[in-house]
Image (cartoon, one colour):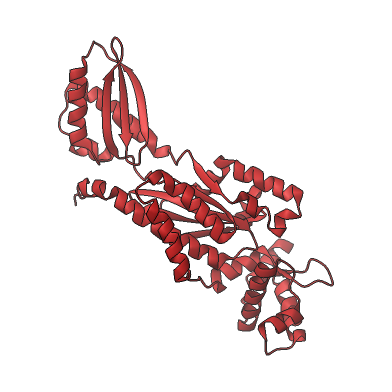
Length: 366
């Protein structure tokens, strides 16, 4: 019953003045990392209302669940609900200064032809610009896309099938043929498949590849099986940067247990990959931002953190994820702006890199 009453109170609308004060308290708490007193708020922002009025409004915000008071004589700090209200209704996304945009863009321009450098560079840029721990995944094809095939005679009747998918993923399969097949025949089959299937998904291959010989059909069945398996691959590597600077934040620097738990979370890539996959479902568009505050009641290991995530890449073709992990008291507007800017740069680079393949893909039939 108490929980239900608290939910009803937290859902109560705020007056314009309460919203203004909550926004100021959040911004000031982000800046100084300490409880905010009414008098300091009046003096810092030259408010036209008295500190007594501010105290009354802060008390009401505390009743509503948006503020808390660590000690009786201390000021107040935003709660998770307070930060969530700020993010959903009060946050103003910042525009990065032109000089900062040019600096970041120049760093990626130097790496534009080296896709393997994008992810560590993005992680480094995000961490340095947000003071959080950055998370970056490599671009992965939404659906497995055929790029190249090699069929190699190894020994006896054994054939090594090497399938290269869009994005550089390589799948291999050892096969035992019913009879000895010379390398010339294997190369002819691989060349024919490469001409017919380049740039196609498994479904497109099934629809458009003409009648195959029994031997070709056997190889094609393996290829389609490998492409189907690739749909479950979300990227084996999660690039990270900035863990040490995150641990210097007051929330973690003075709490050994909390910092130890955070390090374990950041080192446990499977958990972070699960969070990313859950938050950035296929329906989340490129550049769209998801903000998880305090684990959102689902990810207990992230209860002391906020995670901001977005996608980059080419919609419905190849995408990766960008994220920043920080304390709940983090500069949300600034972090969102940095993430969106880096997402835009990586999306442009992805388009330039994959444009030839995109041009080769036939348009969908009505």
